[in-house]
Length: 116
Image: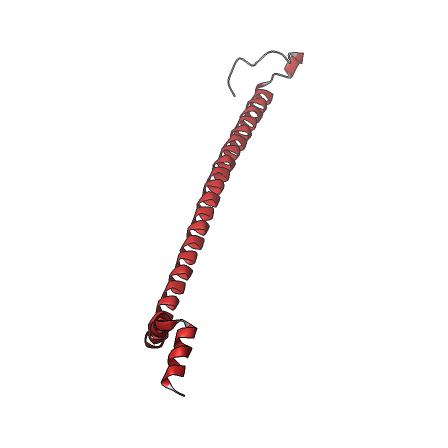
């Protein structure tokens, strides 16, 4: 091939800029590949960070929900214990009145004069 044909071919393919691009591509292809890989790694790491942040936020929301439910449960349990204590106290008072009741001589409404 003659030099004029080579120059014509180079000018048809983009001239000096195409030649610069070809030289740049051949000399820097490994560097560009590493840069691209690094940018993909950065994007992947950012995606993982976002996912972890989202999961932490969901965990925090669930923790607050669980805390609220547990406090509500404790309140209900305390209320139930209070009702149980009241019922037991009234049963004790009722048993005490049954023991102190005077059934001799038909005086069911009178309380005995002495403590038993």
